[in-house]
Amino acid sequence: MTRTRSKRLPTVLTAEEAQNLLQTVSTRSTTGLRNRCMLQVMLGAGLRVSEVCNLRGRDVDLQRGEVRVNDGKGGRDRVVPVGHETLQWLQQWANTRRDLLGLNGKDPFFVGLRTGRTGRGTREEGQGLTTRYVELLVARLAEAAGIDKRTSPHTLRHTYATRLLSEGYNIREVQELLGHSSVSTTEVYTHVNPEALRAKIQ
Image (cartoon, rainbow, N blue to C red):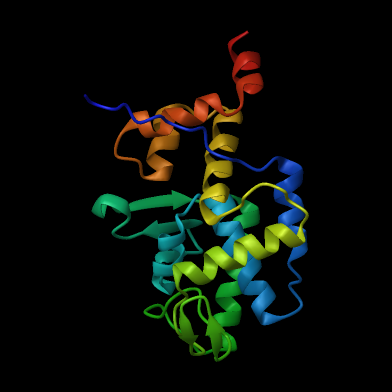
């Protein structure tokens, strides 16, 4: 007998929760600025945690206001345009990683800033971050923000997708921005915000 796999609705943050998460990060330090930019890339461009960790300096086009994802899930490349706020944080971090750390376009865009233990081994300054490191970081910041939902990098991606639909983007546009191979994967987000969908239809 074939067992049907149920599709659970994704957990998303409300606008207030997302804002609280961002405000938890102090950008007075270099580490804080990096973390704030990483959160913004997940909330403002919908990148998967692996895509955040694999991002290189050359993949961020500040002139065009877009981020290029190379070899995403399923081996698919895509270009994601970003809004003004996300672009501002990308610009700030790009300047810092260049001027303070001397990193170039070939280097990881987000890097370790001190030698120390993380959830998966030691990360030297200037090395790329592991997905486990980012997952633990997001969970810790969400807890500090008082968010009682289980929050992961994928929660931020879900939040991005749901926001796009509520702002009037159609399902095909959201599919392209998320890099889904099938629109059926994207359709789950139409059930996350039924009030917005009802208002749009009526």
